[in-house]
Amino acid sequence: MGGVGTVLLPAQARASDQGPVRSNSSSFEMQRWEEHFPTLGKGAIVCDTVSRALHFWNADASIYHIFPTSVPRSDELTKRGYTEIVRKKVGPSWTPTASQMQRFPDWKPIGPGPQNPLGTHAMYLSWPAYIIHGTHDTRKIGRKSSDGCIGLYNEMVSVLFDLCPIGTQVRII
Image 1 (cartoon, one colour):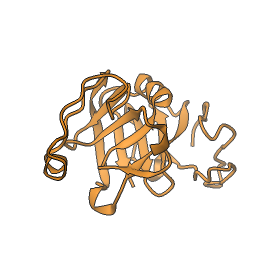
Image 2 (image 1 turned 90 degrees about the vertical axis):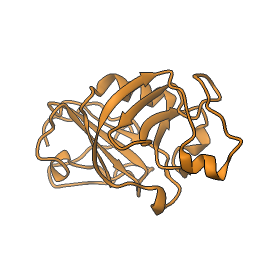
Image 3 (image 1 turned 45 degrees about the vertical axis):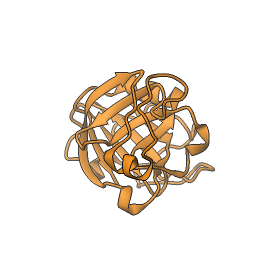
Image 4 (image 1 turned 90 degrees about the horizontal axis):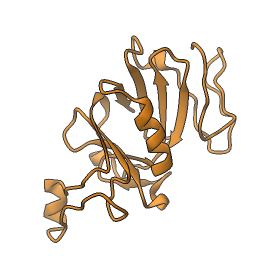
């Protein structure tokens, strides 16, 4: 698996060479990047919608982090497969999608700040309207609560944001 760096939440979870282990109260299953990507490239992210965890490896596998996430509310809203980070923004603005506007015609765009559902940082995927982002509403983490995005605590998305270059490969499972 290469070197294992600091793991964030759960703090003491580690993968062994024998495969995934569960050694934490959150039951995050450790992942191996080799099971998802042929190379690490600029880095790799696996978003596990079942365990509601995001796994990150840097380009040389010396850093591996696990972050708890919010995930889409339903299978219809969950896009699975391979994509990549194409743009990053500190202090993002939020605009409702076309389907959200159909359901909630009174929704308006929201600029950066505590009312913004994208939190403090956003990493845009090559799929339109799909984002890995922070949230000010910490009740959403660990739940099915989004319209398709992957949400993290603001403190954790800022760590991930600093580690991920544009071009980081992403797989949502």
